[in-house]
Length: 195
Length: 167
Image (cartoon, rainbow over all chains, first blue to last red; front, side):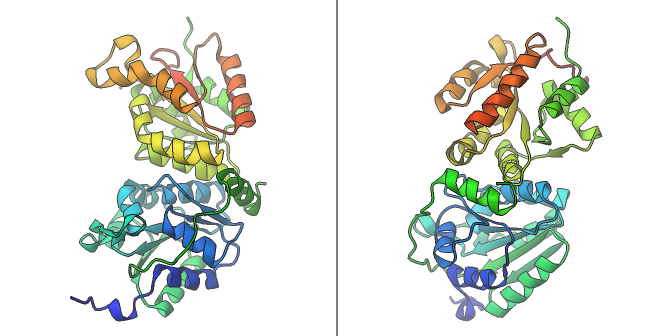
């Protein structure tokens, strides 16, 4: 059965394109797996921290960065499997309430990097979990113009924000992250003024 | 042997540059966390893997982070330490309470209490066991290792070394 949003749903790569069109030099933490690989292919930037392991903690890294640099708008690109793994962190963010954190979740309802095994996000509404946890803004979108409108609005206002983007299962053909991890650390720290 | 005051311990950490504190509580760590919380230096975590990841984010943003945890939480933190900190060269100080030391604790602490040093050696995280006599040298070693190796470094904290609040 086709879901109502299916016809106009973006791929994650298309959604990442749309977000990068809006981003200037804000630091971005991207979860492991294909999200990092696709982001690197679409637009490699020094202010992007590509995760290659430690599934489930992208938002925790983002929170630490947001607390360390309250004047920077910190953005996290996350996935549904990742959020489910580190769901306690939604509570931490909801309680600590950093104004400068925007948590974007690409929700394709599967573990796409490992062969599309279904995730519980098809029955558990992660946006509602974030709302209950206390995020200041929570939006659930799937069309390109809504993605761009909400993301722009979030970057310009006090958070923490949670942007759930329903995406299809399509994966972009993208190589593994090319940089060595210590190089990612060094380059990212320089980009956020700590080099 | 004189016990270290929690307040003095926190000041000693600040003196060598540590300026970001998170963690998950343990009774042995209670006094330190109380001082940190009173001074609004502490952001509580809900899990130890979240705590070490938050510390990593803080380091990326220019902070010198400390994570406090019970050694049971070391199990929770292990994957993040191995697939984030150790491979990305992201340092932090782990202050780990040593529950189950010499087998004198509740059953759930005994296996970790016995194997913790070997676990750290296996994943190559340098550690020391803190004492009031060696505090100054332990902290100097901590700062040196942190800066030189850019990896997590651990201080084990046994019961009765730093004063704590009554649970």
